[in-house]
Length: 259
Length: 324
Image 1 (cartoon, one colour):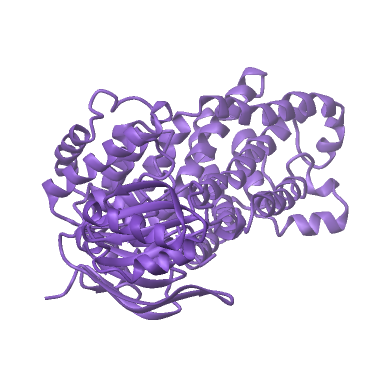
Image 2 (cartoon, rainbow over the protein chains, first blue to last red):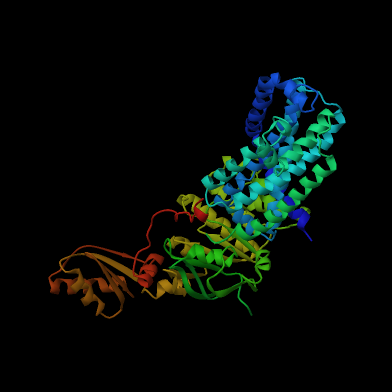
């Protein structure tokens, strides 16, 4: 079975492209950097509020985990866009007439997007450290990365799926923007769920980003999130597994559907 | 003995439009087979069905002995496909593009290395192999693309309009590359083109396709031979139609074609017939303002089978995959 090497072939190509677009790395850092520096300081006065909700620390320490996940959300959900270009400019057909399977094509892309997402998130961790955010235990950076990778795999799956089925650029961006921002906002990224109105907090419980943020925050700050880490991880893993299966299936069915 | 490609009543419709309308043909092993037709004749659609990218509406096709629908995966491991639009990855270097192709087609690593060196030499890109392909000229990219199609030694290579949009020197270089690769590897080549001279230069056999149907198949030389040995083209002052009818009745004339004031006669012995033609014109009171004689071209063959000239309008509009 050559599934592994096939997935790697696509992964290799995507990573080559990433390495050659150095300006993109920086551009993608601007937005999360602005969040953490500007929003992190703007809301520093909310410290008593978040303390009342059970978080004992600076606001910027609270929201740093949210921005790490923000980076992962946007890097991975935008990451599938080059699938549109591939469909437009030859590469997709080239891959489709080659012996490798459609699902390895989808998975290779998802893995590459997730890797990029982790790299971007690690740069945000670097920025957080530089502006004085402290970790309770620096060894936690490794499991944080692992959680970000897992989470990104799910969101890149959504992105690749939308890109494989979208009928136009506009449709892709419409759907992706419709998904991206709410997934970030309806979560404990900026404020504890306890401070959100009841209905928003309920909605947030259906958002996989919520559990990711809770896990990352707990690992960064050492403050218990209120949801057991094993439960959060289980929910996230189930979400990712479902997306990988659906994305592989959708990609196989739709990517070369007669136009 | 099965052919490299066998199509049986192959058809493809998009909505109410029949893009390919029940074509049957056979391509022998190691032959260079040309699909000649104007834009929209059904060439690309046929090629996409043969390369498993499109599912036929009806009919069937076998490529390298495998059914393109039921055994699509096996077809894919036996074919190379060079698309009309350039599929070179511009973020990668020339060599990396070949490495990518090797991985996509599961060529073993060490084996790939040797083949890549060899192909780079064939297409004359050894010196530029480590440069990003974004710096390559159109012709260099196309040669690289063709090399990508050949890397895994496919038994059938599909070339969709390999030289569309390139200048004449570049086209000649590409033809040379194709001939050289064909000589070295002996694969079957199926190419589509709307350039007459390309079909003439490269192909062992040419299939003329028009409005989704096959109009004629044959060796370029024979097809031209059927047209007579010489082509006489005249500008008639007066009734071109009457002159044409008169010429058509003469001995040794294969066919006559009228287009406005211009009369084209396909004849066996042009030099010998010229005086007689002038004589006929005189007796009709038609003056011949200009005359020229040439050898028949694929152009003439094409016109005689389709009744119209190929519409020369640059590259075929990119078939938009769902409007992207």
